[in-house]
Image (cartoon, rainbow, N blue to C red):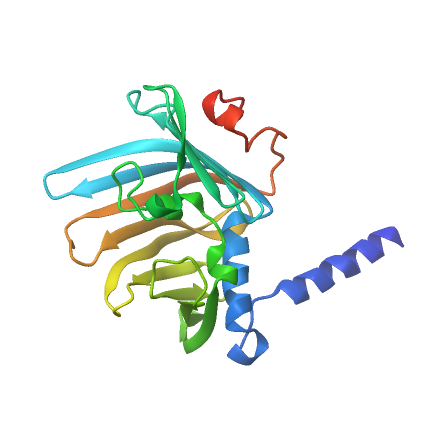
Length: 253
């Protein structure tokens, strides 16, 4: 009986978590929530390579990252040697950086969250992986199509008037297995400033993941930054001191 019970529970969970077959079965808000939960999990650990491309040069760095819940994230550079140890901690909406060269932890003011991270096309906000887009935007499903056997949803997300958000709107393209295929960032005047596009979708740690994310600015088409996921583990056990200023400065994991 216990085995039968577990089988029934597993079957029910599969049905309840199955991807939607039509727009009427899930709201735009739920689509965004599911996409954010999908790439974060309850907790996650990942190894990534970030490639910064410019017309006359290119450089890369290898990083390790951890997340927990909606608002806690830690990213640490491990290679190349000159950048190793640089880290960024996001905790309950606040961000700190650490540089071994100056041996200082510095709090990042909210006014600098839109600044480039480590000279890349990703901002501090992008790297922090916070879930502000869930609660501080109004989401509207504006298009739906079928592609390669998947339903593809296009969602327009506009910040609430009292939200501390720099964008005029964001546009998200989400696949029915919760993979975020594209994210557009528009300013207050309706100008598209930058776009993040996903590619090389693979099954990693039991779920579909876009293993390559490319961020590019509209006004500089020859420049881009790619975040390439080499390994990811979801719902992994993290030590209790992971998301602390002490661990940011003196790594324990």
